[in-house]
Length: 144
Image (tube, rainbow, N blue to C red; front, side):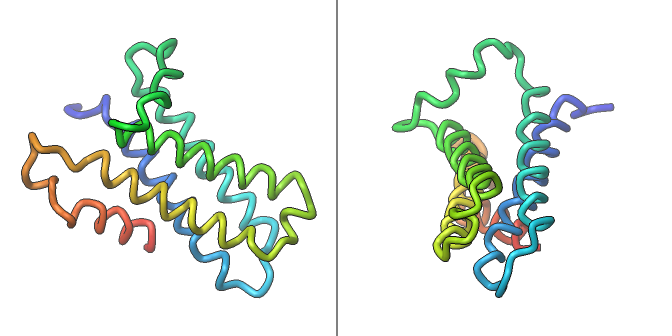
């Protein structure tokens, strides 16, 4: 099957977009069901773990987070980590979960994750992808 080695990235992209889409909808809810909050972490965590299957040298994965000035992939890793960290704190620490700013923070981080995911694919070498339509498609996918 051609392209089989790319399936972990497809899974990460779709699962992370689902998690971010849910996070973006949180501020619109009067009260946030705990099961909905748990689903964000489950989707994001599963996506990130699946993405590790794509790595050639897994022992070098930690280096992905250290090129923030130049690399959208590093920014994507940071955004996913921040979204997961705020989610985990919100689930584990009841005062943060009850705070009015938490859904807005999760929504903002979710938007940042999806935007950075789209920017990863804006490659000069692929002119059809290097347009505003690429991040817009990622945002629309998360909205769905």
